[in-house]
Image (cartoon, rainbow, N blue to C red; front, side):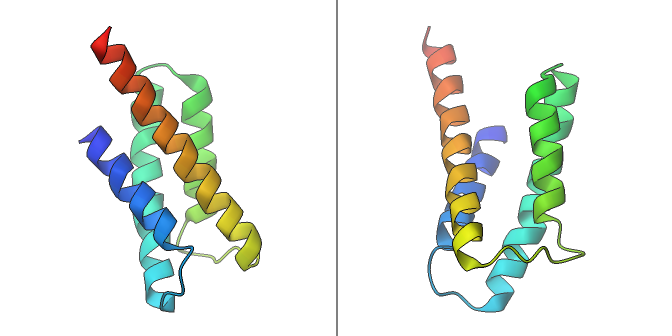
Length: 99
């Protein structure tokens, strides 16, 4: 489930680079808020403080209740950076399982 959620979030964040209707971005914010909240909880349980704090901050950044206006370019940079971090997390887990 953890990996599947990361892949879904990666796809949604990359989709933000394209010209999408506003409803898509609202869906991404809501889904990201839930996903990052889940990752924060899992990281807290695993006692991974860095990831727990990072995912709480990402949940707050993507929260759907109060729009944070960063501008399209800055949001695109945030989306790609977060997607790359999630990809890195996927590859770390894959490498750890293969060892």
